[in-house]
Image 1 (cartoon, helix red, strand yellow):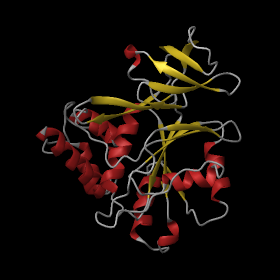
Image 2: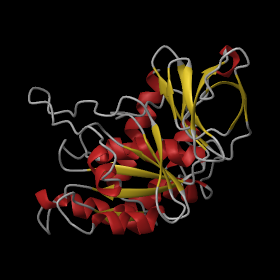
Image 3: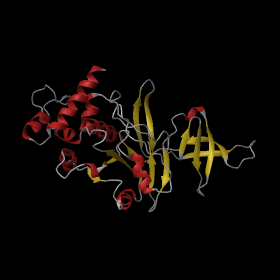
Image 4: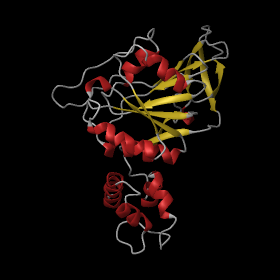
Length: 291
């Protein structure tokens, strides 16, 4: 499925043609990236209309909680998530860790994109923050839409993969799509002057085909990933270094907060787990306990 608009969706057939299809009520969780079965509408003379009858089994799905609606899928059958961050709106590793916890729970690879690097100096604190994630094994790519070669750099990352961009509104996801697909007229919005938060440029997820058998899903701006659908142990497992050291804790159900014999707290004290990451874990832990 290429895109969805309410109870209708655009489906791409084997010839690359786009078919406007009705979505049956039982298939309400249909998202961009889903592989589907569909049929022509027999009473309709338009060859470009049909109805979706089945969602095929997914290889992966990225979900996030939506207020009053519960846990909802964002994109399906994806190989990697490109988490776009920048210094505008102001960078915060706490929000970045929210994304990474959610992605780790999905079992999908995450790549970090530090965008708008033309706005930061070589010794800017955000670069030091990125070294923390690189040390954990996350790939970090620096981009700027003012660089002429950025499209080639990203295409190498996207080649032979199905990828989805996520990140706060205003970090430049749509601008990056424009660099990769200049023929696609994706609207680019400026930051809100009053709030400093980005305006929601992309309102509907859409799938694009690139060179080198790459598929890209551009998703609506997401300011936060809520953690209310995860328990404490799922949150801990989303921090890959905490998950590793937790195997050595004295108690199997250790929360890594107050228990004696906690290997995670010992790793923080020794510097094997960065204090910022542990602080972000504590914040999410306290948030989950307050629910």
